[in-house]
Length: 116
Image (cartoon, rainbow, N blue to C red):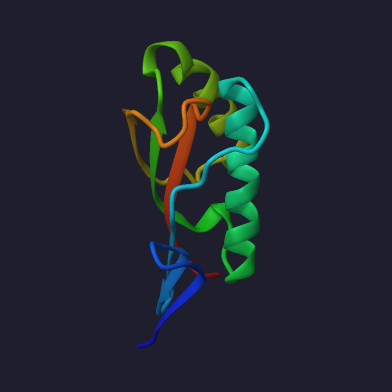
């Protein structure tokens, strides 16, 4: 099987595929200021990247969600996340608090999916 790397730079690849598996690097928001808006932006990026390689949110296998402040932002992120998922299609998931790369980033999500 071939490993394919997309949206790469010297430090990372945005997407790596191996057979029917799709690995996305951590996705961060653009302009939104609160956790709900940032979660929506991140999930939109995930939708677009998965579509690019023949997958979608219904084929998620695993997700890791990083929150800058889990106490302040878990409920807001979780509301958007739950609304985004299709019924009965929830992946395995881990949510942790972490110091993220830029101070304004409240939410970062990385996923593993299968191709359709």
